[in-house]
Length: 66
Image (cartoon, rainbow, N blue to C red; front, side, top):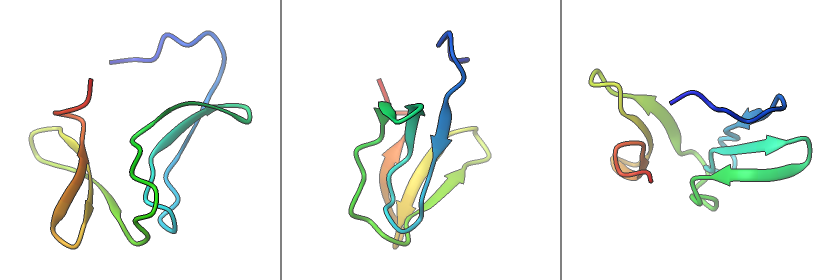
C-alpha cells in the first residue's frame, strides 16, 4: 500500500526502542506499538512480509497488520 497522506512524513525505526513509527513532523500518525524492545530487528521475508523480530520472536508483522 502506498501512503495517500498529503504531506511528507518520516518513517523511523530506532533499534534502541523497537517501535516502527510514522510521523508528520512531530505528530505520531501510526506505529507498531512495539516500544520497549531494544535490539529488535526490522526484517523483510522472501514473501514480502515486513516483520519486527527480537530473539526469534515476531513482535509485529505486516501480514497481521490492519
